[in-house]
Length: 193
Image (cartoon, rainbow, N blue to C red):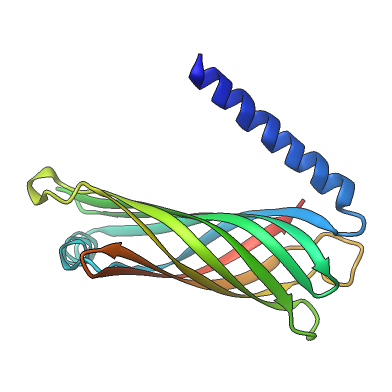
């Protein structure tokens, strides 16, 4: 019963956000943007870095992610936002794997700099990384942490009545305990709706 209620609540929230976004799309006072990303996660844990290097040097590595933000206008050039970005890092060779899932939630501010759609964002992040590695390495753990996210983006729909994508990059810093720090540098494309 709890699972059904959580799914129902999630669906209601999702469709409510879409409705608010569509109602506000004409004046862009509030909107949702979602897209895909890729990047370079630099893990602070030496064992994780060694496994990733071992499996990707003679195998494969794919890094893909998602970005979702809900933006609310404060003034013409200032928005507050709530967001989530997730990174999926898959390293494997023919014998083994070292996969990681990392997600962060954040509130922040986005300021347009006066050069078309160029904007800068700053956010406080709370996130978790889950490692899926061979069991003999004893690294299959979850690590929560909080940190910050700095972004630079160009919004092609700024000062237009149309909805165009935005291209951006961000740097996210997140401590994971035991003096380990994750650094994620990511490029993304998002579409407002």
